[in-house]
Every structure is written in C-alpha cells, then in structure tokens.
View 1: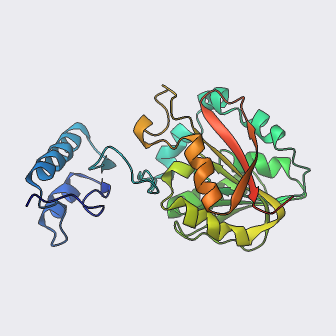
View 2: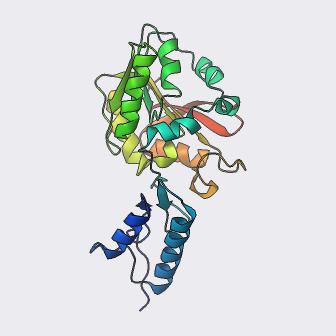
View 3: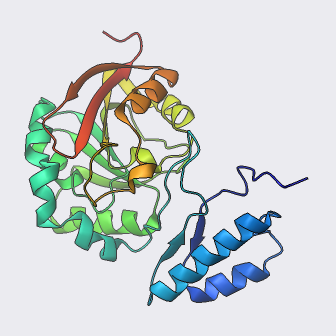
Length: 266
C-alpha cells in the first residue's frame, strides 16, 4: 500500500547552511518519508536551495500548503540582517505606521504589547506615542530581544521594554490594554489555542489588533501568497479563540487590519 504523507512528513524543514543539509541526511530522525515521490521532491527542493544560496540562512518547505492552523516558519535569528528589510524607509509607504497608530485612538497612558516585534518598527513608535504608558516589545527570537533592548537604550525610551516570550504560550508581567500583532499572525502555530491563552493578559475591554497581508494581493513582499491567512479565516480562528470582531481598518493598501475584543466585552 502506498504511503500517505502525514502531517509529520510535511513539517517545514529549516536548514541553516549546506553542512546542515548533509548532516540532516545522516540523522536517525527521518528527514524523508517512506514515499518515493515525496522523497524525490524533497531532495530536489533541498538541493536546489543549497545550490542557489551562497551563504547564510537556507529554508525549505516540503509542502506548498500549510495545515489549517500551522504557521509559516522562517529563520529570524539574525536581527541585524532582518533590520535592513523590516526598517527600510520604503516600508512606510504601504505600512503607514503613523496613520495606523493614530487610528487606534490611544490616549497616551496605555500598557501595550507589540507581539512579534521583530526589530521594533512599531515598538519605538508606540513608546513615543505613550509617554505615560508602557510598551512590551515581545519576540520569541533571542537575537531580536537583544536587538530590541539595544534599540530602547539608543532611543532613550524608558517606557520600552524588550521581552522574550514563548512561541507557543506567551506571557506578560502585567495586564495589557492592547496587543498589536503586525505581520506575525501567519507565523503562529495553532492560532486559536495560542490566542485563547492571551485572554488572561488583557484588561477589561482590552483589544487585539491583527494586521497581516491580504490573501489576494499580488505584491512580492511578505509571505508567499499560498501561506497568507485570509481575513475571513483570521476572523473565524479568533472567534474559536473566544474573541469577537469589533472593527476593522481598510486604508492599508496591502494588508487588512482587524480589531478584536474578548467575546462578552462591551
């Protein structure tokens, strides 16, 4: 009987360099499934990426479609390298950070988490906007957290604190008025379970703002089109997590912006 690939067979394969490629082929933990067809496709993808990548990160995904609740994984361990992309001035034209933060109607004293903060593109802007508040720049990558710590010190933002969080069960030192999730939702595994765990960290009437790439956008920035999460799916998954859609912002050219509150909040 032909082997039917399981979810374990289809997990994303992350390879840091060509040496890792050779090493993983020798591991006792099976890199390849028992399906000859899947083996050939996986090896072809690995070899093509290894030859095409001169140095640095190498990432191969064995399948073209994610599981319903599995995220799109990339290697974000080199914060300095990613800062050139994340903090590129050209991003302002379509990310529209100032207009976006203004639309959130913050008073200046809120406690906010920038979840999946990366290199702090939104974190430092939030900190300047909330002089009487507190901003947690939260990320699961250690190098990003180190970068964010340096960023807060260089910009002299005492109300900006870098925070290392678990990629599956994030926690915060205090209750939050707002959790901002920009270009991160599609990276998160088992999203309903993940966001359900966050409810305990929201103040009464606290909000979660999710901003991510439109499924039908033809732009090349962001995740591959087949790995994007449609806004309707995002809304459905957040409902499963116990939230309701309060409002949305529609002025971003490449992205949707959805504002959620815990179901039952006013």
